[in-house]
Length: 265
Length: 295
Image (cartoon, rainbow over all chains, first blue to last red):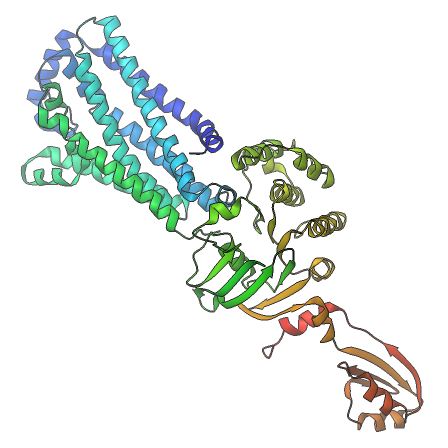
């Protein structure tokens, strides 16, 4: 890793990271404030009235606890979608933009190998994702402890956040691969966004159940099972390791692609 | 010892674009000029030397190392000036130079300051607001600041004014004295003529000729303007075995390829009034290689 390049990329991406993290923290705050033991009952009522809608949104009611409520709202949708969007944009900025603009020629015309450059930019992406989820997770825990002391199953919540991080890493690996492979910013952005959206939509369709249930086997989102993790189900806790493996493979593939490719400038 | 070695380099972009079967070497301490019209493959060759592109076939080596595989090692002692100047637009000149210095792991900035003074560069200006010339100067400083042993410069004076072109030529001559190996592409003959030891002429992706400047000058043809006493004599002279380029009344333009003596012996029999050397610049030799399908 090259420290100078890391600092440069880190500084450039900071404003965007800050906006995303702030948005997610505000959302976490509103979710925690929304909790109301009576509302929990109302939510159960809503789930009974509109079972399909709630399932499609990934907001299944596992059981009427505080932790389930928080997890449901937090990791049901927005805290999966926002980091995904952040990953798509940042990964494109880190590699594809330098390649398309030709600024990569200055990065390559130095004693730093391609492998080192790719590793540095990859580390920026991973570091920001980690920081983003860690801060959101921290904010949520602090808020929960402040407003409803002792009600959050902190350990389970941390474990689930770690699993969501593994999922984001797998997505980041894919986006980073496209960023290393494509010669145009637009193309890298389109490819990353298309695949992310595809997997996300497949998840929604698979959640519908019925004849489309088999779709769950082609989206990485299936490897995260919040209900199972909250119930300390061993299989649910181990499945995210596959996501980690996918992330490692995709990042390695991205680095290799970048090392072997011909530059357009 | 050969510093740069290109062996059978081929990179086909289709439709006749690219470079085909290039062979040339640049010796250590030599300044090599790479000439050719637009789209003749100069930049493509340089991209291969820099390790940006992988050759379809053939090899390029710098100091005995493969340019693609060992790019990072080669780059330690190499300075590069891209033909397309794409600097980081969000920085100013100073930030860019210190970023590049730190990124390269440079220890001292003395040389950088000297170069900035030399090219009279305002480094406080944001890069996106710099003129083309200022960007070119910044890129030049960036190529020379780590005092590299080998320099690869792609059209180094493309947007420089006359004064800065001279400053650049002086810099090249100084570096040459220090024993640096320099490969530069250009389509400006004057700077090549002043700085280069040998010249490679590229056309349509193929190397037309590699020769020293002296050799090129030897193939130079000289043109003489002969003025005779009357038109009859001029007509008679046209029948002799000489290469007439132009005939106008009593005046004849005659081309000579190194063999002046035979012309003189023929002229001795004619009423010659004046004999002027029209001369020919090196530029015309290049045009001979550039233009026409026969070349």
